[in-house]
Image (cartoon, rainbow, N blue to C red; front, side, top):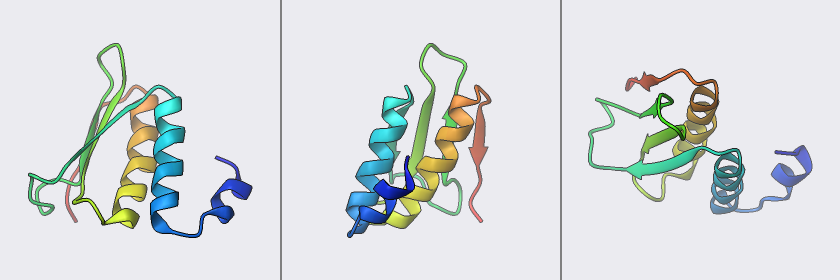
Length: 88
């Protein structure tokens, strides 16, 4: 993701879409849930299968939380190390 792309975003939704697109283009499947209380989990990644997967736990509309989780989770997923991100 270039700095030029990032500074061109005017709305949080543009940032989310930009990062989501970049992560998905890298081969990571990104899923979203809001069913788990945030105090229990922010997200997790699975990399043992054919396709790395990252699940972010954020209600739609919490764009900053979603972007931060996608960026950090995709790094873990593409490193092929499964992990969980506890609440905190």
